Amino acid sequence: MLKTLTYLAILALLGGGIYFFILRKTDNPYGAKEAGFNIKDTGNIGKIFIAAATGDAITVERKPTGWVLNGKYKPLPGTLDMLMNTLVTQVPLYPVTKNAHDNAIKLLASDGIKVELYDRAGAKMCAFYVGGTSVNNTGTNMLMEGASTPYVVQTPAFTGDLTPRYPIDIANWRDRTVFNIPGNDIKSISVQYDFKPINSYTVSRAGSGYEVKIDPSLTGSLGPLNTGRAGAYINYFTNINCEGFLNGLDSMNSIIKNTKKMSTVDIETMNGTHHKADIYWMPINKRSKNRLTANEDVPDDYDADRLFAIINNDADTVQVQTLTFKKLLRKSYEFYQQDAARPSNQPQGPNPKYPQMPKQEVEQKKGK
Image 1 (cartoon, rainbow, N blue to C red):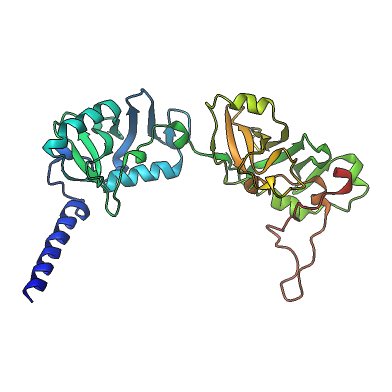
Image 2 (image 1 turned 120 degrees about the vertical axis):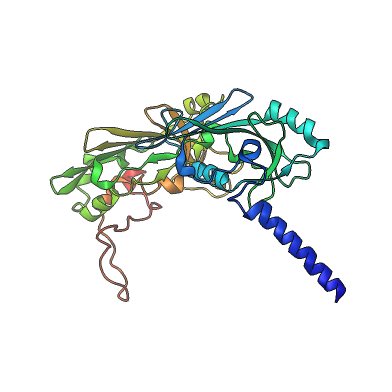
């Protein structure tokens, strides 16, 4: 019984310690000046500046239209949300021990990341340095600007380095949207194929309906326009994202230069602006699935799952998934095919809002 009571007392003390140091976020036992790493209300933040000892830096500012990265880009929501959540939940666990103090200061000075937070009026809220894991790998060493003692900081239910939550690389910060245009804002969509021009087409609004221009040699062998498909297609261009940016890679220019262009997608909006993506094949590599299984829609020298794209007025090169772009890169004759009837045990007729386009495995003879 005595042993049991002893164990219960120890557990109670441990539980209290965990509550005090981790879960009790509203109070900082060390004071904001020495360890004010926690921001209770991130809604007051108007600007975030993060800089590395290498000279790399990013600035995220709150504008009337939303957050802006480095004065011109839209930040990736996931990265911004992760940072804000970290600022709310991170708390100082304890001061760095005397034995580890000097080394922690040295690493913070040489490899640390400086974080400055400003309120909506432009006044500095706080500034601190983030730099590497603690000696026992249970937290992250941080130092308030002007303080002499670094602290081990952590968030609840996480053990490890918080430094990656303060990214410096702009590629980790930039929003990865390629197209996000509501159908009501689209005037026309042009898809031109370099490798099989006969599959090219332009979908445009025509009064209250649509028209689809295709190669004249196909019109005599096709039926009437499937207006349901045209109407559905024009709604496909929302939330189309890339996997990541390839800017700054030394070999990228030469790769694009020596790679065949697949297609160009050009969207004209109702106000006359254009959003274009030049899409290139990605050379086949050791991870390409079609090294073993050929894909009839993809030349053997190129990857079947990923593509390169040049976007934002030729300013950015990105990597995209074929799966994401497949619904955008249709074939001209598909707009003139009628939808197959549904089985008798299912509601008949296509969904009037999003009728299904056919699979792309079958190539029309004239397009081969």
